[in-house]
Image 1 (cartoon, rainbow, N blue to C red):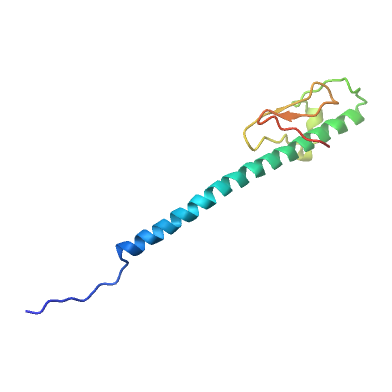
Image 2: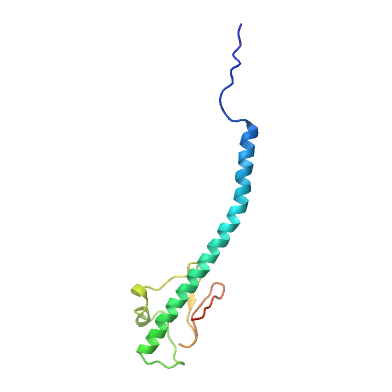
Length: 118
């Protein structure tokens, strides 16, 4: 009686464990960096939105001869008409934009109290 001792092709358990370990190590390095970059991108986008909103408010102020002590609302359709595409931007991080107390105070974001300078 002859026994067949031919080895079938495939990976050994040791080889599979090494590959899984390497993938886990790379993931441990890459995932925190990805999350940090995502948060930074959201913050930068939020600041850009705040600048766009305040630019529209300042244009509205100039056209309508408003005083620095006048108030405004972000829901005002006249202010929205000065924005790109007349569309009010949303905070990418899920926050809400709050107008300043007067037209001379910058708009802020409720998420992380973001502000900016023009």
